[in-house]
Length: 253
Ligand SMILES: Nc1ncnc2c1ncn2[C@@H]1O[C@H](COP(=O)(O)OP(=O)(O)O)[C@@H](O)[C@H]1O
Ligand SMILES: [Mg+2]
Image 1: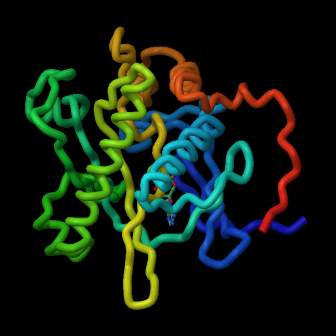
Image 2: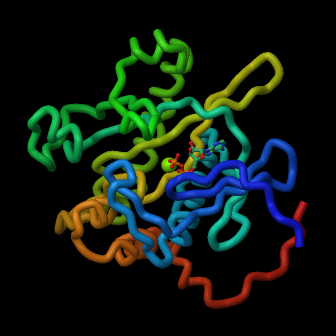
Image 3: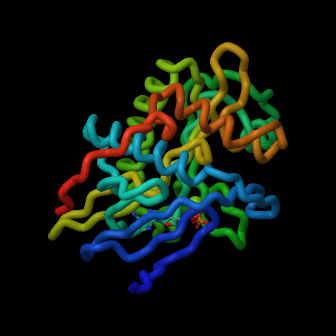
């Protein structure tokens, strides 16, 4: 037995060195945290669901030509991803007002926004991930003008894709967060969607009832989180429980 090299352990995931250079194994934990980790719990099965759901969204994005870090899922809790140079920002896209924008600007939760709104937050736990402006980002060198253009473009494409997928299964995509990283190719760099896309990083409301199917269930003590995530997975047809038969052996390369 050889011990794997842990590269990073965060609140929701662990990164291990991958089998080839330039790859990581991303392990999804069952830990749930909110309000900058002031509230925390272990939710049985959350990691398995988020691994599946993130795979589903990343594969879908790759298929329509939106580059992501995702290579392949390895097992129930782990996926192989490309190592990227993370831009230290969380990119949030909002379609309907909820959460911090409602609080900060006094907009009632559930208000349809006139157009999607993109926000940037500086990824720093000690500071509580503060909202930053494009000028902050440029002045402090977190990203260039070109990066900002590319990030806005990526965020808009992810929004179109996710909104469409969710609408198709009777869910409203209220807002979501993505993280973006750089991949270097010779003299060029490309920005790709990294980290995860899951009900941990989206607000998802049932289109008919308004029932919350995302991490707000945990943040606001609204019920059983893994039931909510299972419902999202079930509607998308990626329910782990579907795979009752053993998969055929597959050659690894
Ligand atoms: N492909 C990647 N290459 C490098 N770092 C990544 C990649 N995907 C995600 N990350 C980083 O790995 C960490 C994932 O673990 P997570 O538990 O979400 O951490 P955190 O508590 O910092 O949010 C995040 O810091 C994220 O920015
Ligand atoms: Mg994270």
